Image (cartoon, rainbow over all chains, first blue to last red; front, side, top):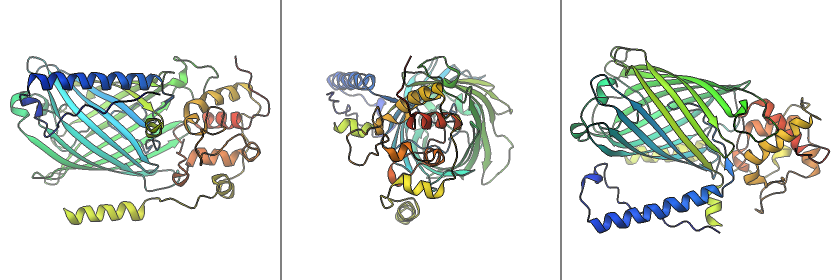
Length: 316
Length: 130
C-alpha cells in the first residue's frame, strides 16, 4: 500500500506570493515537502493502471468529452514563442482535471512563465468547470463551461484568445505586466460531434474582467481523427491507432463595444497527439498567426497522464 | 453576486442529469437500442484487440477479466446476459454511457474499436494471446 503524504502547504494568497520574502528555513521546509509529495506521486503513478485521455490533440479547443467520474488527469500545456519586439518566452499551465460526476468535470490550473532576459514568475490560477446537460450522445453534443481565473498581466499560457488579444500583450516587460490583475469570469458553449472516427468541436467564448472592461468574445474550432480506426491486437507504441492528427483554429471576435474582426488575432494550428502504451499522452502543435495582430509563429507542447479511479485508490 | 450563485446552483441541481433508479442498464438499453450484428464477430484479431482496449478503458471499474473489482455495484461482464445480449445493445451502452450508472460514454473511441471490445466481451472461445 502506498501512502501519499499531504500536499505541500504553500499559502497561495495572490499571484504575487513569490515576491514576498519567506524565511530560508520555510523555503527549505516547503521544498522538502514538495519533493516528498512529488516522489510519492511518481511512485503512485507508476503503480497505476493508466487510462487514456479523450480530449484529442487540441490545446485550445474543448471537445464534449468529459473526464470519467473518479479519474484524475495531470497535464501540462506549454507554449514557446519569440514575439517580434520581445524576448523568447515560455508560458506554461499545469492542469489537474477531475471527473467529479458523470456530467461534471472540474479543473484547476497553475500558470507560470519564463521570459528570456527578464524573469520567471507564477502568474496565477484558474478554476474551471464543465457540465454536460444531455444524458445521451447526439449528433451535436453541448457542454457548458464556467471558469474563474485570477491571473496577472504577465500570464503567457495563451489558453484562449478573446477580444483584441494580440502579439503586443506578450511583449510587455514582466515587471510592469505583472502589476495588472486579471480576475475574470469566462463562459463557453462547447459543441462536439463524433462521426466515423472524426471529431468536430466548436467553442464559443465570452470572457469578462469582473471589475471593469466589457465582455470579450472568441472562438475555437477543431477537427481530428486517429490514423487508424481499428486497434492492433498487440500492445505497441508506434501503432497507427496511437496517433491522432488534427487541426484547430481560434481567435478573438472583439468585445461588446466593437464586435468585429478589426484588430483581432487568429491562429491556425495543426496538432498531433501520441498516446504511449504506458498511458502518457504527448501533444505538439506548431501554430501560425493569420492576421496582423497575431503572433506570427509559436509552438505548443504538452504531456498528460490520467490516473483511473483516483479517489478510490487513495481511499485504499 | 448572491443572486447569481443561487441561480447557478439551482440550474445545476435542477436541470442536470441526476441519479436515476438503479435498474439494469442492459435492460434499459435493450429497449432503446436497435438490434445489430457485430461486423467483427468471430475475428480472433478483433477479440485480442478488444482485450487490449478493455484492459485500458474498462478494467479500472470492471476488473481485469470483467468479473468486477470488488465493489458492490460494479456490473460483472462475464455473465450470460452480457454474452447473449444483442451486440447493438452493448454498442449503444458504449456510445451513450449512463451517468446514473456511473458508466461513461466511449463515443470518443472509433466505432471499430467499440466493436472490438464487444467482440472480446462476447467471445465464445478462450483467448489465445500471442
